[in-house]
Length: 127
Ligand code: FES
Image 1 (tube, rainbow, N blue to C red):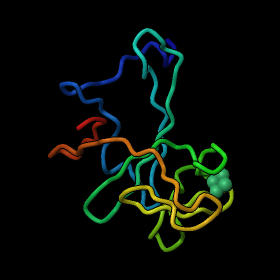
Image 2: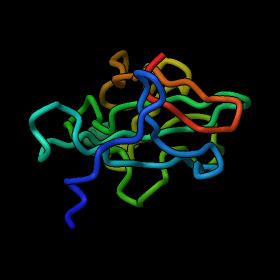
Image 3: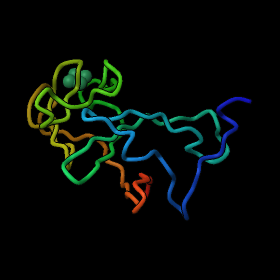
Image 4: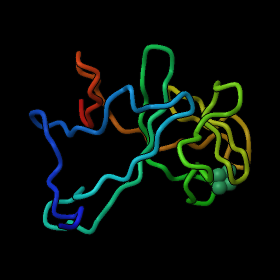
């Protein structure tokens, strides 16, 4: 059976993404399948980054050239783990709002997605 036949797990109208324990210190990248009803082939690449007691979620596309931010899988933060960093030309983005504060696309923003974390640590897409 192909992965594309799997239906996403839902809690109400929110989609289960992963568990907070799956998110490493430098973040986690995921490819969501079945993002559009009736188009099982369409996917969306996203990533999650830890930020103290919070988790933030963004679409994995750098506003500079449209490439994924992580050349090395699941490495989305700089070495100090202070900023999100694109590994192509090293643009740096604030974790909480995705604003680029340094690099070739300074002033632009990553596309943030609303998420919630349930009491059991499940990360859900949607607010
Ligand atoms: S593609 Fe991300 S900084 Fe250039």
